[in-house]
Length: 308
Image (tube, rainbow, N blue to C red; front, side, top):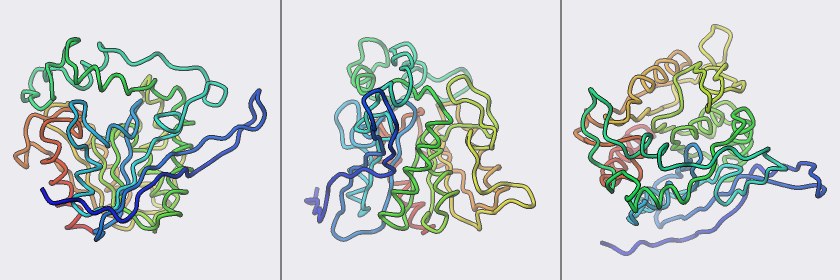
């Protein structure tokens, strides 16, 4: 493997906001870790899902290189986000409200490491046994945090963070996962000229979903207003390239298809990347952590090259 030449790296916060607390005036924001290779192919922003953090993209639960490193080796300047209240954008109940229940083995086995549901292909790419004795699952669970308790607040914070990040770094490709999908949709709403493309990996959905954890997606893809939509008077997305990526074992393909159809109705140019149809088999919802994460990343890089 060739040495990786990094010309710049560091950390910064964007979307910093102030809030009055019992201590006085407190602040919070969106932490971003970045690495820039030499030469640079393009800028790529990685946004984690749910109660995860940047570690979802920086590594894998069994210690292999994560997507951040893989895309860096592919020549992307990589900006990896910790959404507010998660990871290095720390949570405090005086700012974000009471904690939700902690993540559990039971919930995470079902969501990320379990065998496929009946009728789906075998889930073979999780890097462990997928039970309570699985060190990979325990590691993944150790870096999880409670799911954001207020979906509306979480999306408004994503709106602020996305706008601030793109204002700072300029036109970029956004790669989002699961609940973090809102970061991409809100970037399209607030800074459409700075979004070169979006890769939405099994984004939260489908449109207009009502869900105990996700909240009510009353505005289509988010629970908060956006500046584009399918109606005659709405702003359109003017052919912005979007890839909606789904794995064959997660059960997300139907939701992803409905999300893609909704985006098309808003004027986007959408490709549905079904990994199984590319010969990439055995993946679940956390494909960036799985044994073939490099193969999935290569498919995404190929799509980006063709559409930017």
